[in-house]
Length: 166
Image 1 (cartoon, rainbow, N blue to C red):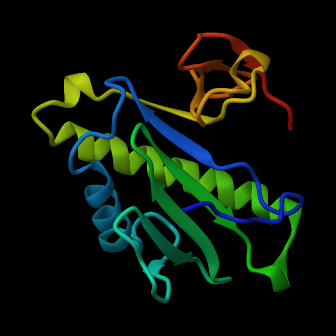
Image 2 (cartoon, rainbow, N blue to C red):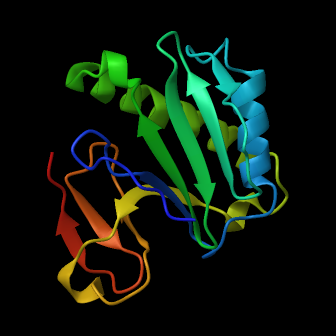
């Protein structure tokens, strides 16, 4: 299912890629439960958005402004889309929200993968859709960020490095 989004107002999705090359069993379900159960402790209230929900896609309303966060499960990575409430769109608020969501997802995935017996095989990385020139004809895949303050990302398929822009 392809998402149609307004490119000028919606940031690129955050991608979560696992070193094993697939989404480990239980990670997405565990993340959803973590977000719903711990929302008061993580700073933003996460609630399920109105249906429909799909087996590979779930949307939340987040925070007091009712922004939307969609988690989409792909075969080899997880996509996270952030959409600000259109009535309250603001680039400063968008950046702050994206940083907070990144921190919450990072904390949640760390907690979830530590509880699995196969956690040693499921090291995860955050990244963005790869746009390096040698990958234009390949299926969508991530370029991962290997540092906390990303200035570059590495393609998971051909290991090319691309410089990230604001």
